[in-house]
Length: 228
Image (cartoon, rainbow, N blue to C red; front, side):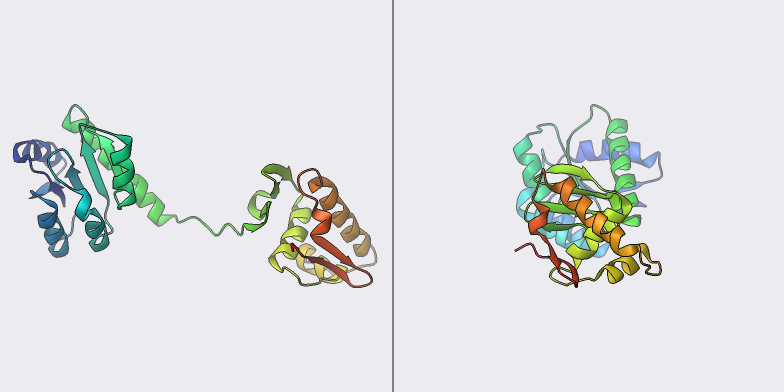
């Protein structure tokens, strides 16, 4: 296993390499970005480490990012927020101040590699979040944000509201709502249950957003969500 160092300070690069060698990780050295990109096209690496104090990295950083998905870490002794933003915008995974010793640099790099690997193995699940104007529903959290104010809902309240919002403009009868949200056989009391749920939704969200103008009641038919 080896990493790619892009560093114009060859002595410093070999000093860092000696510390990595203790972990059985070797270095491949490029003295500029063009050479680094060329090596990336021909070899596999654990990560790319760039010394921004000795390499003019910004002009070619986007191109480097386009040819590899491995982590790109940029270390500097002259940290500025402006340079950090520029580096991250162009595809760097980290722009950080150099530690006083090689062990500190290695620990930081390994920690970031571990974090990136965990993220790639465990992508975020679909959130199912829906937003209309100033109304946001997050069904997994069973809550709604109305004008940025958090409003907690019961499981069934959240289920009914999500069903209506996720099918904007569609009309659902009480029987259909009960079947889809409760997943149970419709009975005579269900229509009262649905009516109370709609009433509770309007009451809870009324302080943040007048939901009554969004949930439309169609007499003898059902309910629909109409944000317009």
